[in-house]
Amino acid sequence: FRSILLGRPDHVPAAVIMGDRSRSRSRKKDSRSRSRSRRSRSHSNKKPEDYGVDTMKITDDDAAFVLGKGGKTKEKISRVSKAEIELFERDLVLEIRGTKLQRKRAKKYCEGVMAQRTGPVNVTEDYDDDDLTMLLVPQEAVGFVTGRAGNFLRTIEEEWNTLMFFCEVDGSRGRNKEYEKLAIFGDVRARRGAELKVLSAVETKVPGYFAKIRDEVVSRDKGKGEDGTWGTDTMTFQDDELSYALGKQGGTRKKLERSSGAIVQYVGQVALFSAEKPARRRAKEYMKWLFDQLEGPVYVDGWEDRDDITVVDVPSDCIGYVTGNRRAALGGMEEEWGTLMFFMNKDGRDGKGKGRGGGSEQLAIFGSQRARRGAELKVMSAVETKAPGTFTRGVREKYSDEKGFATDRMIFRDDELSYALGKEGSTRKKLALAANVILEYVGHVAFMGGTLKERRRVKQFIDWLLAQRRGSVTVSDVSDRDDCTEMHIPDSCKGWVTGNRGSELRRVEQETGTFIFMALDRHGEERLLIFSDNAGTKTSNGGRMHAERLINEMVQEKLRDSSRGRDSRSPSRRRDSRRRSTSRRRSPRRSPSRRRDSRSRSRRR
Image (cartoon, rainbow, N blue to C red; front, side, top):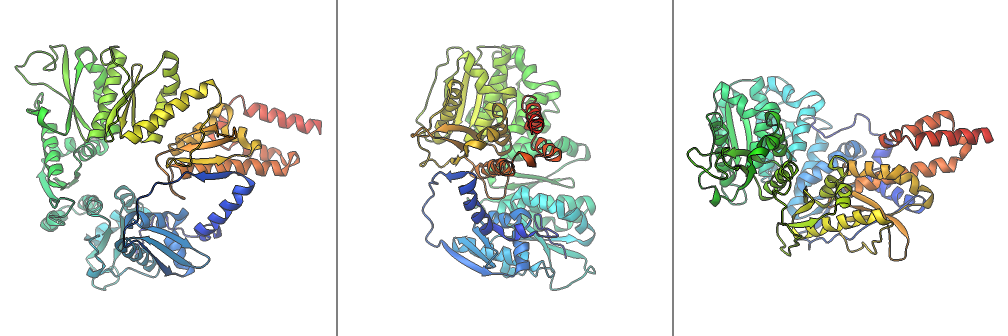
């Protein structure tokens, strides 16, 4: 059989088998000896009426399969089913929390994962809770689709948030059958994206297979979706057209997919667009404009009446700077924000925005509202660099009370701008990611795009950041915030955790997408605050919980070294400490002095 598990271990160490319960106990013990952390209150919505708890008794071997390496399989099942899953290894009990349907799906997924331990899973029609797609894969393509050690299917699972495994066909076993059945679990969009990705790979290995099942694939899940208009449209390419529509490393296809909101996949010479009707229409329009550009300038008539476009007037002398060499700069913006962007030009029209002969040219940006605004501000920032004052002359600060998406403005002084920007824009990017907001600096003006909560959050982050230049920052109370984790660090570990000029905290911020600093509470006591809109999970990367784990590791490491005393610092121990992190290796002021101190202590002894 072929098990498609995210990181299923060949050997599960005892530390992993102990699972979440043992980690919880160790965390409580750590809070007394190393650092104390408290996550701020989460403002969760009221639970649904059918919300409840189910339990499953499992074996020790099953526990290893359900948990997976580092708990990844359990996390995957939880994401796909949208249920909360806890594994208590000591009692060998799975606890599943959620609505009735979420619990049913989670239990089914767990049973499917555990069944793979003893052989292929027998999936029948009653397995379908409106969450299953069954796809027949030709035997000669199964290995190609699976990938080495299941890596290709695991990649698809991660990309589309699905659970996938091969199963029995009509109870038959062995390799004598012509096809193998691939079960894909998830919501309708996730299943469709994963299915088309698999079919694209199959068509590469077995050309012509898609033509045999085309009608079945195109009509699948028709009429579903939120508005009942879910479906699939197709377009057939010529040989020379396919490479252009695909783009370098599939970049053009991905751009069309993200900007239109439809699933765009190429199976052989056929492009498939799967989504609700409006998104499919946008995807086909964008594809048409893409090919129209091969013939000459494109102009979108009636663009003023569309809700998926933003137009920016770019001065003629800035067009080359915004576009970049071989369209590199514009392509980078498209990739960053998931937009489709091109300059519009209609022959026979003169004046501003109607051609390079005028003062400016119109840049069309297609995508979601948030994506368009992010790309627009990026263009404005580039233009402002080349032609100062184009977008900021006479601009004042503005703070809106609009609860939905809007843009606020904040004006920096000269000395504030460089500090808030950081090296190569690292500080700006950090604040934007932690606050889950669009943050772009156009000249000396910070544009903050997002909901009211997001805009106020990033404004507060900027205020705290600028206040750090003048000394200690006071944040009286964070107990009512849902974006903060508070950690109390032992005094002997504070310098070790922050690093030289804050280098260790910057490393953790970069790895986890958080905003971290030491702050005083209302009593004047210093503690570490970790801010991020992303709470994170116990095992995944990114978010506050990931940052908390990294901080705790540094505290534990420092206390372990201190408890051993100076006599335990052998040369090999010193070499290990110098390998702790990149930022410590790169710190020329810290490492040499640390080595000199340790040598002098040895000589003094």
